[in-house]
Length: 115
Image (tube, rainbow, N blue to C red; front, side, top):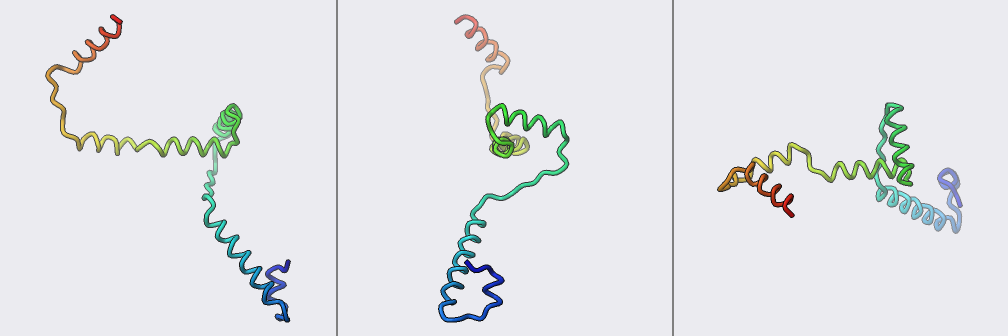
């Protein structure tokens, strides 16, 4: 297969047009694949202690370091930030109970211990 330099330097001869088209199609497919791939994240200056612990945990789960760190990041991002949770709680209307919350907890605990 001809490389990019070969295609640029040579003058097109009879039948070369198809080679250029095939090469262009392959480049288009390669670019499409690269665009569809996941993004890369690089973290620098990780303390040795942290890196060692991450490797140990990944090994204990039978995962690569990349897979383990990706799982940790996905788990972290799945939880909403604390500020967002507090804002949602604050936006809700207050609940009016007939008895104090401490009394409800005491009743539940005594019922649990009785059973």
